[in-house]
Image (cartoon, rainbow, N blue to C red; front, side):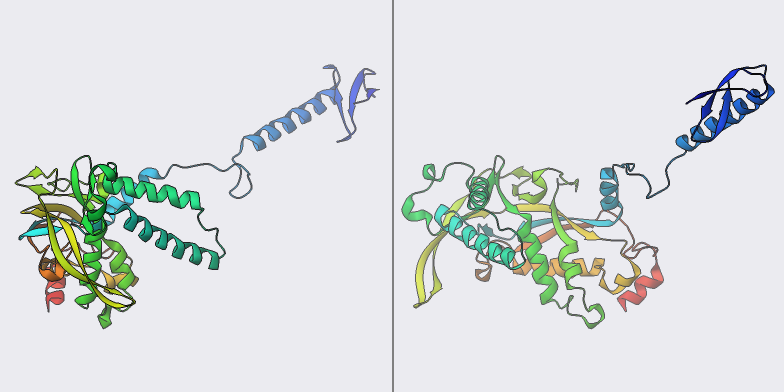
Length: 348
């Protein structure tokens, strides 16, 4: 800033070309004191403006918030849980192919269909290297140790069994979820005129989850694995291998085959049925109530789980079914079992 002489006292002062104001350095000059006071007030106003929080949408730096726990709380506060114990009447058979070649061909065919669909949608399909990584991971989960050490080449092509991990054979939760979906459709629950449009809601919001015998949910990879128990002890290996004749369809017609399945006798499972609660009022006709869960499980008993269900394998009995939570089906409504009038109307 240029210097100039004060018109009152003759002393030099600084001239601010931007604001056209004078800032005097002499305390004896009244004019200088006035301009210093103005300058100090302007500085205070500028400091206040800087310290004020920026209005929403005006700042490039946004405050962050960790919502991880909110996700956990939302699931806890919006799901009704049912503890279910089942005991197989006789036996249950493994349905997963124990052939590396068969499994590889199945997965490769699946990936090719997904790649074709991705191209049609304008997405980038997975590379050959990525598909091979997924196949190897699936084979490792399936066999748990090298296939060559366990099965002969001639027998493995038609052998089916269970998934294995370090604890023993287990049933994937997807098997129970598929049973739920099948029962919902066969019982007409998703086809009810009063519940039109509910199929997707039911099929995606009623799932089985791994837990301990008291219903405490697992949070690691065991969440998707339903292990077998016998007399409250974990089953570590299959009991027998069942061999039977079968037939498959080919382009040349039906073809007779010999196949074998891993077999378990007198085992049981326990899992938690996880169902969405606190739905919006627009989904009032699409909730799954206690009576719907009972119908699904009672029909699933004779439908069975595992392979060869049409030959009466895999049938079970429900030995325990207990609702662990008591959240309302619709947000704002009375929780189930606490509104006698509504329960009477629903029963009618």
